[in-house]
Image: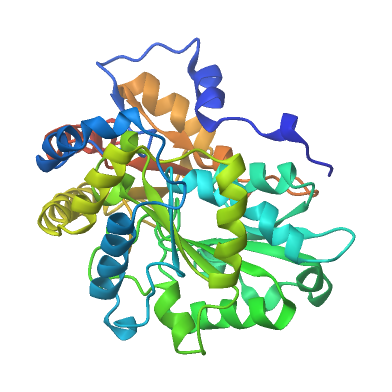
Length: 394
């Protein structure tokens, strides 16, 4: 099946069309979008105001030294195995949100892969920016099923050798969106090994790394360092989920210094710059863990509430990371049918899983039987939504 930009459809636009003629029987609760609603850290307003004069200047596309140093310090605290390894000048590049970086990095990855028809690997379900990047780079998107049978992550051993030989980039998310699976250090090491063996870039999307249930998820940088350095891997992260500031549009990419040097040159002429006040505020946020701990505790309470309320749901599993429930809706006719039924019956809106995945040539969609529910509202609102679903379904 040939894909083009016309193939990319917003899952939210598709949901609006699905529910357009359906009236809910109760005041609605929106669990569709992964937009944190715990509130921005109190320091944000003050730190932005402190640097307000920076709006009068063009910011350096490579970021200020203070921001790069703050990110480097956070990485070292978060991943003690690489303390003293991170060089703020060579290993880090600030971004205008991680999505901007995830999209634009593919062009440098393709440039480094000298093959006639490069491929870009991605999990299925996937984040839409991965597909948009592959198509913009005129590369073939290759969808790797990420199902219950594969542990919700791509089966690395099932990727054909001829595909790996053509691969320019491999997008991998841990914790996974939407399933919440966390890649082990052994899994990450295997993915890094494939990237080096076949000469492609591993783009590890770690945007949900600070939202987890028990142990903190392993990181790509620490896994790469045990294998001799950061070659062929870049990790992407942001403040959107970690610090509840999706509107700040501030993130970073870290890893392979040769790749980042080329990427920095590209970004200098082709990508948005992060305003100086935003860089100043971002440095303060990366330096503070108290607000992150408090937010993580709130997510833990909501996931516990979901386990109590929907624990008897078929194949229910609390996510190891992230803030989404990935619910099996097969007994309700699949994700689309369940979205209409539950929206009409109790006013709770969520995304059908098929809207987050690609249908293959045989008509199979790994998200078809599932739905994604974002636990981003307050504990009270989230609890109300979960109770409505449970009571409505009996």
